[in-house]
Image (cartoon, rainbow, N blue to C red):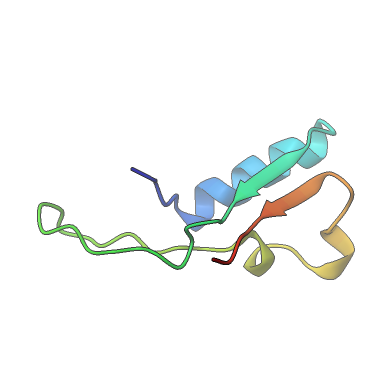
Length: 69
């Protein structure tokens, strides 16, 4: 099973990677396949890395993986 993370956590990870010159790889292959879980009170929401960075922040250190089938 996949996991959707909060916007705050994603922003923190992105900032950490940028400060330390680490590659940030965002796996968004199943990003549009989020379903509600009747056992959880809150349905997770998907946040793309493209919503969190500006064009100037899209450095060679930021990568997004996506696919169509």
